[in-house]
Every structure is written in structure tokens, then in C-alpha cells.
Image (cartoon, rainbow, N blue to C red; front, side, top):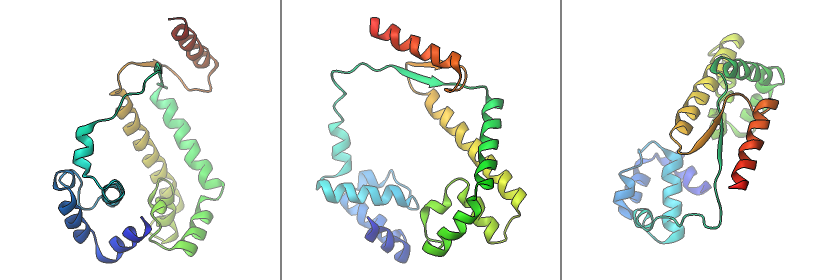
Length: 187
């Protein structure tokens, strides 16, 4: 994968998007040309499996057999969740996120993909002088809150989830989860 990523960084995605299109035009139509991780993974899968992804999709996947699923989801109060997220981001900055980011930049340079992740991206902007500390912290907090909201939206679409109001470290939520498991085992 590293070779493909290095080539993509050097040459851009166009030749690789065209290459994947020749490997599997149906699957290629579902991947945006700028979505490097998906493009790389799709090429890897086609080369490793010697099959078109679109053909593998048609085959489907075998469902898990011999297992029962019990889906439990946590649904904390949004304001309380955001308070925890804000405190966590602030804690990351206090524990040296900016210095860690500086070392990573020195060692790997701007091309290191993980430096675009939550918190690191804002620390990079701070180190480049694009924003100040307070703005970096607030931007990191906002990015984490946005991510949490996207996760909740995603998981709400999952079927058959037993939603528990609160956080997993709350005794009442833990008891409710244990009761759900015990009830499921009895049935």
C-alpha cells in the first residue's frame, strides 16, 4: 500500500482512478477521485483477490452463524456529552498534543496522514501560526463534537439497538446493560 500511496502523492489520483476504472468500472464509479484511502484499498482488494470488487459485492457475505446478537447503544444527554468532549480535547492540549505534533511533523513531515485527524489538525495549524492556542482548542473541540454527532446519526440507523440513556461509566447504565444481557441469555 505504501508504494501506491507514494505514487498517488507524487502523481496525483487521476492515473490511479483511471487504472481502477479499467480494473472495475462499476466499483470505480462509487469512489470519488479524491478519496485516496478508498481508492488505494479498492486497488489493493482487486489486485490481491484477482477479482472485481463489483463481483464480490454480488456474492454477498455469509451471515454469522451460531451467534445471537444483542446490540446495546449508549445515548447520553447531548449537553453532557459535549461537556465531556470539550474537557477531553482540553486535556489533550494540556498533556502535550502540540509538542507531540511538533515531533511528528519534524520526523514525518506534512505528508503524514494521521496529522489530519481530530486534534492533530488543529495543532498543526497552531504550529504553522495560522491560528492561536485558544482558536486551536475551540476548533478541536468543535471537530470532536461534529464527529460525535455524525457517529450518533450513523448508529441511530442501526436496527434492533437497545439504547441506554447515559454514559457507560454510570452505575445505572451498567446495571441496565447487565440486565439486558441476562434477559437475552434467558430467552
